[in-house]
Length: 527
Image 1 (cartoon, rainbow, N blue to C red):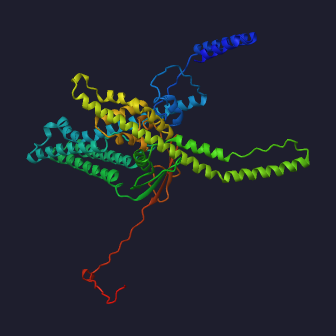
Image 2: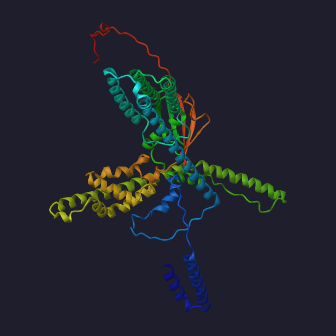
């Protein structure tokens, strides 16, 4: 289109001037040479690691990933994109890769130690029972009925212990914490010391002396299994039950827009409290929208813009300098008066924005209701058709989407939500609503009011990294007045902990017979 307009302009001016004709040819030659050079250049694309936050600078990434004009056209244009990376970006990407590799190694190392310790715990009672039969079988006394009953007890206790350990410890990890879990590490050390002490006693008193009382050996193995069950009960108390009673009220504030939530937490360390807060954040906080903050920043910059004063005569002229100084003070005072009236501009600007939002919302509601009405008509008509001609929900969504696409796109642009919803995600949601026979209001609820972060695509929350910043050690428990930050690329979560006060309640007895009343009647009444 640009080449055709350039060529028509050249033809129009060629009859008027020979010089302009030669100038047009040179400009076209330079344009062709530049286009050839641009096509000959190679594009280099560097894929960021999975640990790179995906929501950072969402407004820019949203424009790169998807086209904001999907409501007006569905044409896909492919091409090469050139990205320039500095040395600092490459160093940052390398550091993120090293950190992710370090976290994976630490996680697998911890899992390996847990598996080794678990095998040692479960194989030790069995080894206590098997080793006497392998080392001195001819000297062992016969096992009676009571001894054989102990075998059944050991088998069922080991099965119960196996299921309990699997349910408590071998669960998929929810997050990677910066430090070890103190109580879990203490329990692992306690179990290791306990099993080693049993092995030392077994080696000194049974293996060295080759004890012939096999029933006593079986009872020794049963005592070990009983002790392991009690240690597991202690683990349940320390890891699960201790934190159930609320002890602290934490206030979580997002640094960008000031959205605040309050939660009650029990006796937790700082890092585990941060994990619990992040789990609540993804479900309770609305999705972070940096596009809404850019408008307020630009408005503040426009209102703070003052007037520039220049001294034309220079510093040598004292009279002119005094005059310019007085003029500058007058102009500064005028600028201050103008800034004092900026609240009126803000008021009318917000009122105009609300009017536009209501207008776009009304058009969107009408378009969606008409589209859903069309879907109902199609369903009634398709009941009479052959099974091969019936449309599935995906095809039905693609058929009615163009009728509402433009109104939905304008509304999302007005409310600064266009980077949160792609055309593919909207069509999937529309097909989901059609499949489950949902109303237009149910379909629009995801777009009219911003929902929590987990409501949107996985790119908004899956690869996000959080940094815990605290003056106190992250393994220490929460205290009254504890403050720490959860830092992300786009914003921070400021957390303040307050201890729930001790509540003193007293009882006051009221006699049921005291609930008696007398109706007083007056002889004189008002006229």
